[in-house]
Amino acid sequence: MPFEIVRNDITRMKVDAIVNAANRSLLGGGGVDGAIHRAAGPGLLEECRTLGGCETGQAKITRGYRLSAKYVIHTVGPIWHGGGYNERALLTACYRNSLALAVENGCGSVAFPLISAGAYGYPKAEAMDVAVEAIARFLEEHDLTVYLVVFGDAAFLEGKKLFRDVRAYIDDVYAETCLPKGVEHARRTLWEWDESAALQMDQAFGEAWADAYADASQAPTSAAQPDWDNLLRQADEGFSEALMRLIDERGMTDAQCYKRANVDRKLFSKIRSNPAYRPSKPTVFAFAVALELTLPQTKRLLGKAGFALSHSSKFDIILEYFIKSGNYNVFEINEVLFRFDMPLLGSGTAAV
Image (cartoon, rainbow, N blue to C red; front, side, top):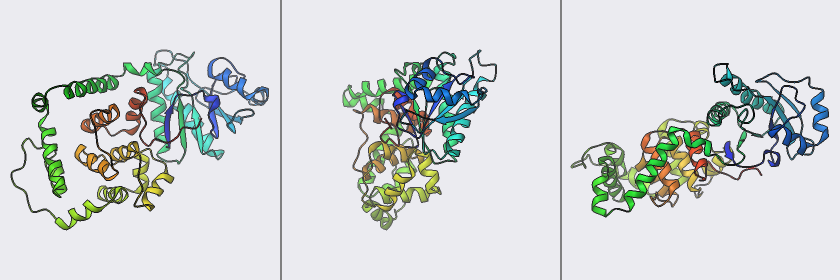
C-alpha cells in the first residue's frame, strides 16, 4: 500500500531509505537517532561529520552502511514549546523535505519514525496527525510507498475524540446484538430499516432502487419500472467489473480512485486486467471508501467479492461507523484500525 502505519524497529525496515529524527549536529544522540547510528555502524557518523549539521525542518541524506536501507535521510524536528512557535509548520517541513529528498534519489520506499514525539516533547497524538497529513498530501502527487513506524504501544491515540466515538459505536453495536430481536428492531434507525428493504429489493434485481431510498423515512410503496437489462448485467458482473463501472459512474480517473483507496498502482492494474480477481476484504472496503459508497452500496460491492458485512467483526463495525458518518478519509480510518490492531485499508505486507 502507498502509506501504512506499522509497529516495528525502524532499523529493521527493508526499504530504500529510513528517516532519522536527528539533532542539528547530525552527530548522533539518543532515542531513534542513537539506534540508527548503532545499527549503521561508524561509517554513518564519519559521513555525517562532512554535512555541516542541519537546520530544523530541513533534511540531508547519507548512505545506509550496515542497515538494510540504502539511504538514511536525516531531518531535525522542532522542540515542543507549547505550539505557538511554528512547531507544526516545522514538523510538516520535516516530512515534506525528507520525502522530496527520497524522490530525488530514486527511492521507492521510505520509513519514518514519529518525528519530535520523543525527547523533543511534541504531543504524540498531534505528531501523528501532522505526519499523516503531510505524508498523505505528498502521496497525492507522487507514487511512493511510505511507512510510519510506531515503536511500542499506540495508547496515546486513545485521547482523540474520533477514537472515543468509534469505541462507543462498537460498544453500542455489540450490546444491540445481545438483545432480543424485537428490541433490536425497535432500536434500529429508520435508515437501517430502509436499508433492509433496499437489500430485499436487491435480491429481486432491485439494485436501482436502493440508493433512492437510502435516507427515506418510510419503505417505498411504489416505484418506476427499473431498467431490467441493466440490472441483469450488474447481477452477472464480478468485483473487477463492478469497480470499474462505479469509477466511471463517479467520473473519477483510475489514479484518483486508487490513491484515495490507499491502494498500490500495480495492485489496481491487476484488478483492472483480471475480471476474476478476488481482492481481500480490506481492499474492497478501501475502494468503497475511495468511491464514497453508502452502506447498501458497500454491502453490494463486498458481495461481488464474496464477502458480507458482519456485526460479529470489530473490523466491519469500525468501517460501518465511518461510512454511516460520511467520513471517507482513508488515513483517519487507518489510524483507528491501527489502534484497534486491525488490518489497514489497502493493506499489504509491511516491509520488515
